[in-house]
Length: 110
Ligand code: FES
Image 1 (cartoon, helix red, strand yellow):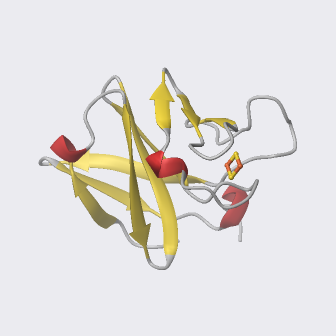
Image 2 (cartoon, rainbow, N blue to C red):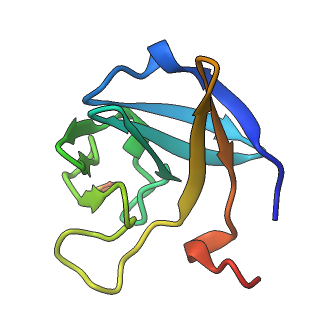
């Protein structure tokens, strides 16, 4: 299990937006869904598009390249049960957002 890593000020990612960060050589898409934080792997599994530069509607982020959509809470693709992004732990503390990176595909036991 990794350490908590400070990736942003809370104000950098207002409610209804998503933000891209590179954390320990991994790309993370940080989403603020009405004040609830979520973080998933930000590299789109389709062709590598930047999910953290996509648009957020409700709890769904849309890849800016070809429109694949993912639930930011579960990491699941909206249409395919087999396509899933790794979900990272995230918390807010004193105006900062911290993440703890999970192994690929959320395999917490790894
Ligand atoms: S790269 Fe994300 S939908 Fe194609």
